[in-house]
Image (cartoon, rainbow, N blue to C red; front, side, top):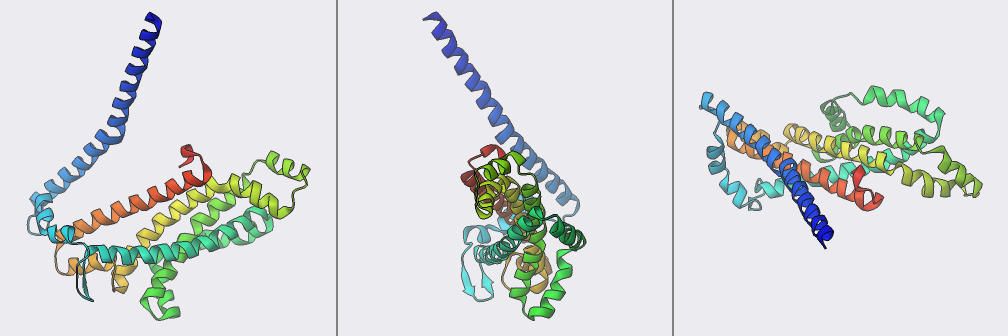
Length: 278
């Protein structure tokens, strides 16, 4: 009985230590980090009072945007929620098209050394090109802002997924393939049952990077092309010298990017059944 009591007490103490450590690492330290950013913002605002609002001033000026995100006064005067949804629609559409192109191409060049030697130099040349450089080319092709924005997202979200998919295919353990050959699996079945599952962690890494790039790109593209979207909202508010709303947009853009990455990470866990790789 004494030993059981001691063991129970030890387990309880260990749980308390783990809970305290979790709260410190996952809650307290991030809060301290955000408070540090807010304090720095406040300090800068004190020295630039003619342009920079303090955090309380920005909150007060943005209350209407925060409390009524889905208002619709006229076609050109929409709440922040509608603008965010418009940007997300473009990002998701372009990202999905990019993924549908990038994953098969990644498999192809991962399986074929000749294809890798032919395609990899092209990727390395095009990958560093700024997303905004593609915008004039897209406008010349489509002569419209909406398809041009989606085209830029597709192009810029390709490279990370292609490269990571190819690396995943190349790094499939040879033992897996040898066992599949011993079992006389058809080639298509080897790809579906062996190569694809082993490559999934790499593929999801590429997809998460590509989704982050797509979200970055759409904000910049919308600032240049106009229309409805969170990027144009930033540019429009800056032209009105409404810096408070720009800070609100920064928060919304950052939080949305975090949610998108988290959603893709959860999808990875759901498909791969491996929470340690998310």
